[in-house]
Image (cartoon, rainbow, N blue to C red; front, side, top):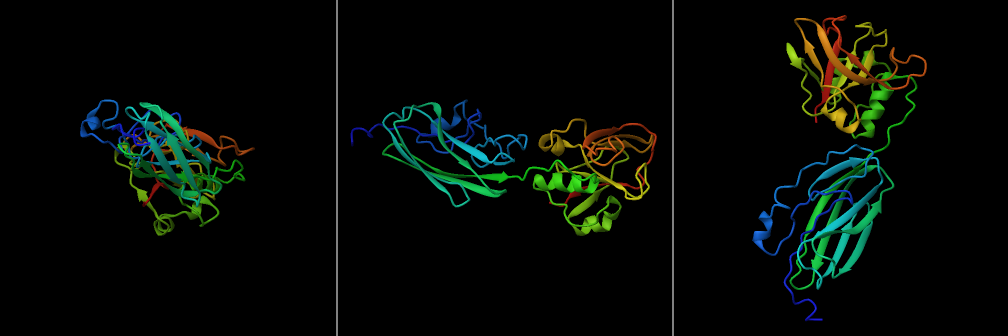
Length: 297
């Protein structure tokens, strides 16, 4: 047994899904390995993925998805044929997996573990590694947010649509009035959303956050109940699969270029199927009675 584990090796452990090609060093026995082109500087702080896709994680990343299953892989660097590793995967929901690996092939990704979560919520995945002599291990964590799937029946309510879609992606705009006309600036301020003032000419800033637009009662085509929609921004393009440019407005010409995701609007007044709609004409001119909001946090 002593001869079997005598060789000095290097272990690079990377947590990712099976489809991930990005890699990041979390443990090394020699400092010169850190600067190799294949691994240096590849880690990111968050995962850019559609929320219905299985999460792809590097160490110290976060990911949101409606997919209940998370798969964990490990990457071994160097000759690990004489190594023995013991992994503990703490999935964050009370479940723990123990995985023993003997003599894994080096310089390859290998499947380590998979877990299926039952309840939407935020989970911290912690993985600890112990290796035999000359085969160092490590400890790291990742964050996984299992999202509740957005419902498909919004009861022909623009308010229900906006609130349910946001909630399914971890953004809170719950409670409050039944109609959009009740979502005045004072109410939004008191519930964690602040109004964004459009510039005189240019893109309406969203700060990388979701953005909601609210029509007051009777303003620019809205009826007595007002109207509410999710504005197409970088956030909604990433998480909702939306298309189109971020919102833009020119005060001088009164031209809108604002794309929204909405329900209960003239695009489909019979079935009220959620739809994407672009406002890009000067017909309505000013933005009086049309207000944009982003969450405080």
